[in-house]
Amino acid sequence: MAHLSEAAVAQINEICARYADEKTPLMMILSAIQKEYGYIPLEVQEIVSEKTGISVAEIYGVVTFYSYFSLQPKGKYVIGCCLGTACYVKGAQQIIDKFSEILGIAPGETTADGMFTIDALRCIGACGIAPAVSINGKVYPKLKVSDVPGIVEEYRNMGGAN
Ligand code: FES
Image (cartoon, rainbow, N blue to C red; front, side):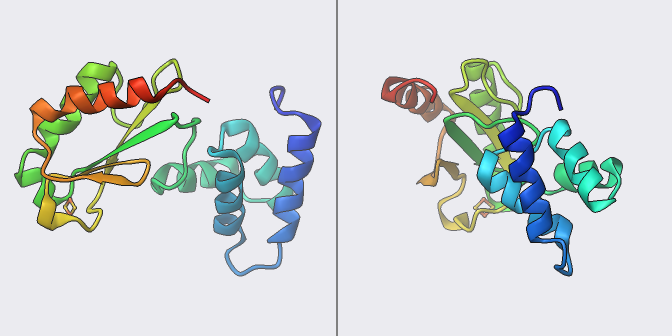
């Protein structure tokens, strides 16, 4: 809890109180925190545990089970590589491997400069243009491994981390 400001702790407490009477308070609390802060580190999970009486182990289980929740801050550009069946059979694994190789991070990780996160996703509903990659909501269709370096370069040229 040492890294959290008093204001942040107060806000997390307020979020916990806001959803206390809901049927599924934990999901609503975690969604609100994820939306507000972009990630849910362990210190925050401890506060949620104190306020709700739900164990940290259970909260941690939920945070790590749903890919919407994140334990770490995400990069400025989130590269969502679809590994659903249609994309997978068209070479999505090689695409994500290439992003990992160029950026030096594994799926789920963020570059040290805060620029890029690679996420492995399930079907993103673009099977007709597989293999597909979504970067901050922009979908890149029918990607080839040889397209990947140029795409990374494009985002590097767009600017640094926040
Ligand atoms: S499997 Fe990739 S978009 Fe459907």
